Image 1 (cartoon, rainbow, N blue to C red):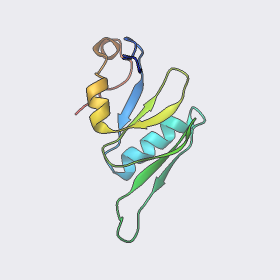
Image 2: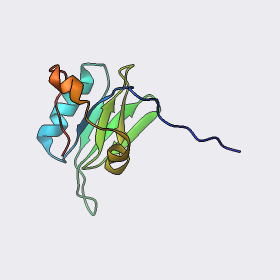
Image 3: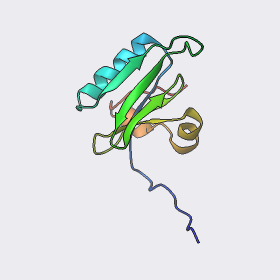
Length: 107
């Protein structure tokens, strides 16, 4: 029988929500590249004309669409998180903002 688990408190991540624009895609790509992580910006064609990001994670390549949060963990790993999952799981660390660490990207 499965057991119930909760995320450990106070395990911080850094994250940026991608709004679908080239500018924020460039910001995310530059941020990840500082840690040796590849993120690609792909412009759709045909019926699927929306752009997306391809995040190279430790588990393989993952697709991120507009609204997805891109997160960096404590071991410099990156992964995409669906907006609904992110909003139910994380909140801005106001203490870090007061110390000048990070920026609030929350909507």
